[in-house]
Image 1 (cartoon, helix red, strand yellow):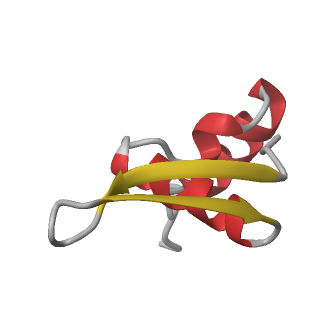
Image 2: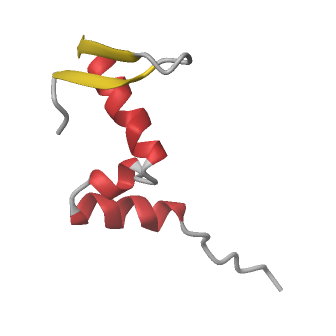
Amino acid sequence: ERACKVTIEGLDADGEPVSYELALPSSRIVQHELDHLDGVLIIDRTDDESRRAALSKLRPQPVLGAR
């Protein structure tokens, strides 16, 4: 789940403080991108069952060749 509204604060290119109040969809996009900067993947935010299902599809599957 993600917040529908967020306030982000930081510094601009000149070192001046900036603040943005964001609502959907921008709030969700910013949270998603901040996750990337923190090394968090979307799969890290899912429940255990969904994570197992996704990983089973992402893992390489053995290919058995015909003889």
